[in-house]
Image 1 (cartoon, rainbow, N blue to C red):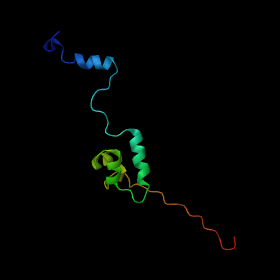
Image 2: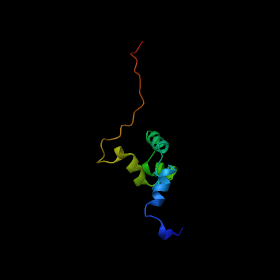
Image 3: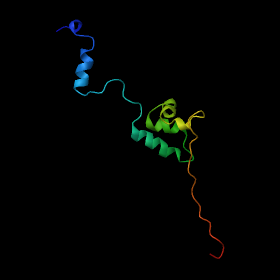
Image 4: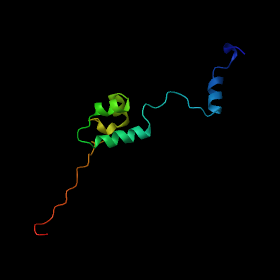
Length: 90
């Protein structure tokens, strides 16, 4: 069977039947997104340094973590260390 005699979507149908993923894979896995969020809690971490460590671009970080963008859904909340204060003479 030559390539020209196949139906236009025959290859797609065969891939779907094999349950093979179609299209480009995601740039970041859910695990990488979690690592990026965890690294952002460190005060000296930058988007550039995180992107470099994960092997993606800064724009990819902003795509997967929209809360970092100024026009994103919400500003990121970085938890501060909790300090317990005791009354003198305690």
